[in-house]
Structure formats: structure tokens, C-alpha cells
Length: 187
Image (tube, rainbow, N blue to C red):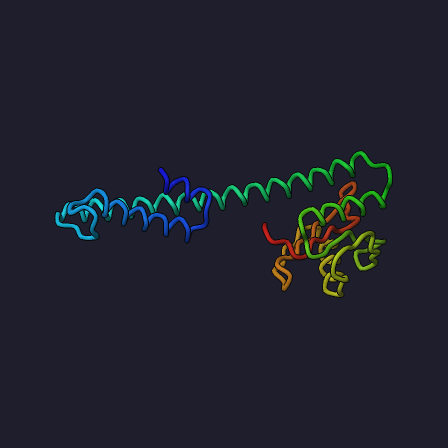
């Protein structure tokens, strides 16, 4: 039980060391001859190995569960930020300025390296930056946005920043803008 408590709150290395210490203590205090690190009965070797392996397995399972819980929390926070952006867009009467502000808040909340919203004129090649934060926009970003504007599909590109995601923003079925996130770390 002690090993499980340690494994649930400490890194793998600490919990593994605790499992080794518990195995040694079990040997010293419970297996004859007591108060030594020797084991006379072969059955006790099996018990000791089983105890150690069980401790390590429980430790690994708890560490994996903790990592999954952290990932789930991060995903939930990202979804909440996106929901908040969507609600602000639907409620806002501030027009394009409201869209830019909501996009910047979302990018800041998810910790993206940079990103923003690019509006399209009469064609995706005629671009106007509505909002941008982080690293300066490059020609590469403009090309990606133009492609998303032409094809109307989400684009997900691995890059030196992590991942670049470009989402088309449509009004009445026509792509009017692109929302770009650079340096997204999770899908």
C-alpha cells in the first residue's frame, strides 16, 4: 500500500527505489534468517521476486494513469478555450475586431508559438491580417492560408515549431478567412 501511495505521487525513479527498499526490508524482517540479506528457502525467492515485480507493475500503471490524467486536463482546457472563443464570436457585435481579439485570447490560452486570423479579399491570394501574435508571419504562412482558402479544408503541417494548423473560416459556404495556429503541441 505504501508503494502504491508513493507511486501515485512521485516520479517513476522515486517509486522504483521505494519498491527496491520495500523488497529489501521484506527480506530482512520477514524471511529467515531474519535481520540478514540472505534467503534460505527457495520458495521465499519466488515470493520476493513476485513482491518486487508487483510493486514495479503497480508503479508503472499509476505513472501511466497520472500522465493520461494530465493529458486529459490539458485537452479539456484547450477545448474550453476554443468554446470560449466560439461563444465570444457568436455573442460579439464587434465585427472583425471581435474575431481578432477572440483568436488572440485562444492562442494565448493554449500556448501556441504564434498564430492569428487572415481575411481574404475577392480571392485567397488577396490577404489582410486581421490579428497576429507571436513570431512574425512568413510567406510560407501566407501560402498555406491561400491553399486553405482555395480548398476549404483544414491543413495540419509538421514544422520546426511543432505543428502548424490552418482552419478555414466560412460564411454562407464561402471561405472568408483562415485561422492559423503555429506551434501546436497536441492534435
